[in-house]
Image (cartoon, rainbow, N blue to C red; front, side):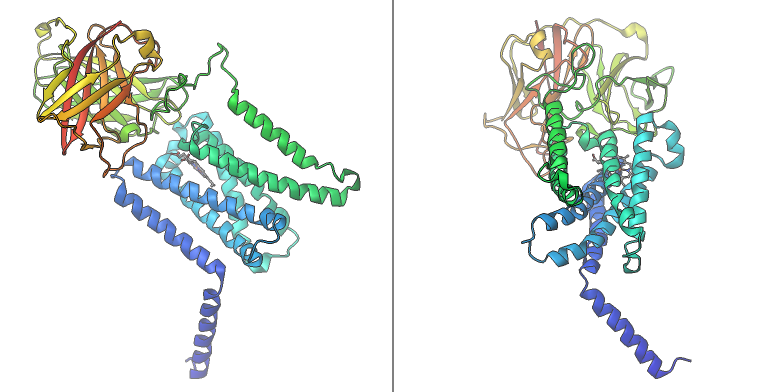
Length: 519
Ligand code: HEM
């Protein structure tokens, strides 16, 4: 039985603990971190349609939050050392440990989401390529270091002989994390984009401050080094070499940079990645396909280098796979999206009538550029196949639904120019009264989608819109949408092409097509 005196004592003690917590900046940092992690999770659930993209986004948000917090924790020391005029330095230094613990918290959340959801947990390890395994081993080591630091960040450990040396390992963790992000991170595939640039600028700033601190220490210990600024000079040389490499990257053995797009071509979604990676697609469908009957199509993706199933895909234009189906006469066009199940993509669709159909899959495994594979199926009776005589359109304005859509380009279209992104195709959309349509809505992260199919060889070209910034759902555009053809896997062939453009206007999907000659 607890006496009243004892009870009051306990309440008083708990109240004391509670009020001390409320006065402690570390408490607020941890509460904000936990709230932010929950808020970010709910925000992703609300704003991103259900599917793998949700996992990828939340994994990335946690990764970057961990990175920013870790950077802040590392920066506080050298910053307060260099700039002693900074106000509330004591408070900032005091908050450092809580920022470090928060960095660990977000790194743990990121690692759990990435490992168990994105990479498929322990069974998934068997399917991962070597570079993934290396990257994950490095990041796992970094996570162990962060765990050890977070576990020893309580007051009772401070001052122990091992505390400082242990906490110096954070620099090793930082390096391992950076290598890991460079090897795996979607946002680090192309180092010329904003996120890697900002990251390297911030890293250089930190290294610069640290170099000054290390020099001050060296000069105190070894008097003959006074005035030499050894570390600063080393840092300057490394920084200069980094810049040099960035602007003059090492080319591949045949003298071309395998990752470079032709100069002046924007970094289209899907074209950022290793151009040398190869994949295989196994296409499966029922032996006999009957017109207008549900038909299941499956596409299994393997890494052509080692035969491993491919599990990780980017979502260029919001989907892990785009499937285009056309008939032999190029009068039928369908753009659909098979569902990913592991390394296989499945969809059930109907073919409207007998004949031969061409199917094109478009997908982007993480780390590679977008991959396009073409297949042919015969629906119903093969004898029904007829060849079509295609003629180029002389009139480049067409009426579709209530709209008048014009295709503009600088004639003639020349294969060699199209191959290197030097000729644009522009669509202009007007309403029935001839007024510009300015209410184009985003459809699959773009104001338009364009496909070109060679009428003789059935070569497929996915043509990207020149505006590479994904619009927000509430954005509107029009009347013009421009596209830039590009020979992704080699020069574009000359010949007649049927161009299929898809636009979303007032909630309705509009399809327009033209036949153009490429010389
Ligand atoms: C065993 C532990 C870890 C695993 C399995 C793991 C896994 C991954 C994966 C799969 C990605 C690619 C995500 C994507 O871009 O879609 C990634 C990226 C990244 N990870 Fe980790 N990670 C681990 C630990 C860490 C730690 C400790 C940090 C510390 C901050 C970290 C920071 C990052 C960053 C900054 C990226 C780049 C994100 C982007 O480019 O969008 N990771 N990680």
